[in-house]
Length: 380
Image (cartoon, rainbow, N blue to C red; front, side):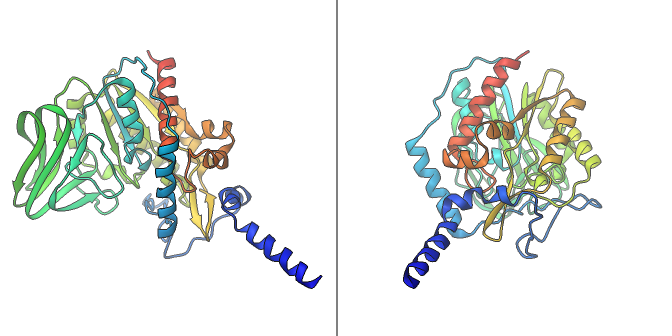
């Protein structure tokens, strides 16, 4: 009998540590305030100076490997079919946080709409970012972006900072027309002519910062997502430059994804959230631009070996809706879509979501399809 009791206790203990229970544990801890270690989650959004800890979600190396393995397997087994959807938009930008940095949603749009070119090409990409239509083989550069740089960031929020003897080599999956590039010298961003027509960007330089390339094509779909971007740090981008570039690119549809990094912070300056979002919208908005604000999927923190929901999730949703109402924008609610289909746990089970804040490729493709259908219904 004693041996049987020990066996039952061991069985119960092993069951409680199963992957399934770990995937739904955040539901049980929603009402609790996560106890964050000073090392892992030391920064937070402070009302005084409205800083967001953009690296707040930390995952162990082993879990990163597991997530990547899952995503690769899932890509082989499941795919969201590409639907050819006719829409009037020819110049589209996806602006915001890590939900766009993978280039999954924008790539699905390119395939669905048959638009295979970029209007803006970053000069370099940080780790974990992707750009399907550009292959990079640059050397000698330091990457500057929202997470490690506060001033003089280029239009996309990413600089290629050359300290000495650098080389740019970018192979494009399309022909770019009337190409210009952005160079930062003597404290000023300048537009420089590069080539009339090219599908390769190659040149050497000894110093200065390169902030990206512009092509003057008739249609394009740009991915301007940056890991860790928030309403409170996105305005580190040089606003004067951003206005000029956005005017040249003249987007007719801009989709914004903000709110994830804000939701997992401790405090939010609501007035600053609303004002900053309006400023960002105004950078990209022209007379005929349609604006879509995404409400992100349920954001989570990795705390004490469990995933728990961000503290300000509900507040951020409310603020995004208010921004949309005040700025004549549409709202596309990914979180609502997820909840209608069983919530985070169901999407994890269906391979549409990872356990952390991010979706899988399958999930982002699915969101892209639903967003395209939404745009078809709401087209002007």
